[in-house]
Length: 273
Image (cartoon, rainbow, N blue to C red; front, top):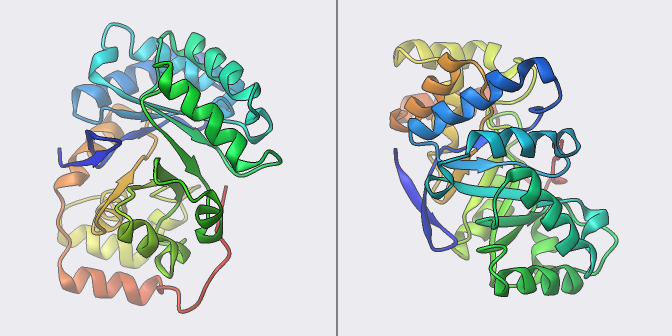
């Protein structure tokens, strides 16, 4: 598995997302098994959040990493309405209990909310000094948000990025690359399957004996300093995601995808889900 440096740690360029996990008790064991398989295949970065199933996803992750915490780079996120000086440490402790661990490798502000960024950063820094988190970052921040944050200690920005949502390529992605701030791409293969059904994606996949999802991931990873965090529950999808890190798209593939999914020509509002 290819790696890059995030918060001073070498992490895989493909990790594991957990959005929508923990919502159905009937799928709990399957979700735990999928995350464990992903760890075995080298996708040792796991991203979750207190928002996902209102803590349910963190509980799934906690069970999946039991006995293998030292193998995992663990990321969680705090709700904006909990991002106050007092609220951040309280939310972090709840997340740690659900995850059954005593520290997070990375803690993110899920999106910008009502509390001053300086207050949230102060709380993050206290958690870091206390050893409860290794580093902190943000999610769903646009260029102006990062400028307002003005914090070199911010380890990453996690945003929506896939073939259908390329808006960040106009200004946000170049800004992150300029500052050597890794970017985490959520929903890298889109939602609901519409992206994966696109004929151009299918044609490129056929040329490489790959799946459309693998091509979508490889397309994300063509960029320097980008980590993709797809979610998978079925074992075959977990295997395919891990293998996508080795797929190298050719110039003709990229040109065809650019024709089908146009790059932004002007500033776009930051897309979120």
